[in-house]
Figure (cartoon, rainbow, N blue to C red):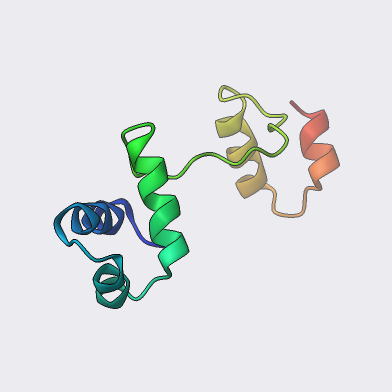
Length: 87
């Protein structure tokens, strides 16, 4: 489901307003399971924004990120290993 936050909010609002999930599925043309997951996320934390992935955290801190981006843009041929050694 690749909708923006506004569309997600509209879907959650439609679920509250429209008594039939089938009507919401037909209106937004997404699956019933996707609507269920979206509503589940909305009701628990109170938001419809996506969660961050539960994958491995990044090695770069927020302070180092701008440096890495500038360095990579200045030198397009630099490898990731060389870039990581410069930090």
